[in-house]
Image 1 (cartoon, one colour):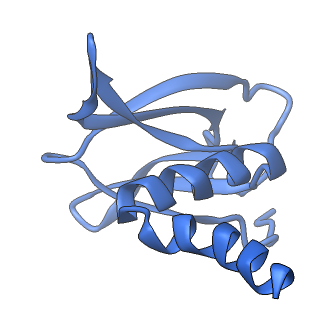
Image 2: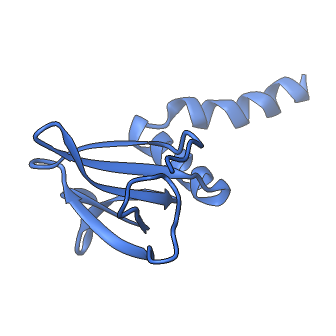
Image 3: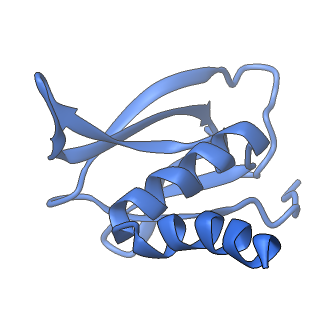
Length: 116
């Protein structure tokens, strides 16, 4: 009987969490494990910029108010100049930002293909 109460005590708080809190927990786990994300910034149906080796993309929050999101996202990744999914000798990790309102983008896990 104690085991049932212990399990319920662990499960009920998680189920009662808001979706945003569950997302934050999920992101913190993802931050620990890391990902190999790719961000394609698209204009006129073409990939204009490709960032690779992205660990995470974060949503900016208002200064002094951590609950209010700002309309942009940011992160760090390698600017893939020749868009071959590989970090070449002349490509470095940089900081980037993009708007939620005006930027067409796709974020996905690196498919592990290289174009040479």
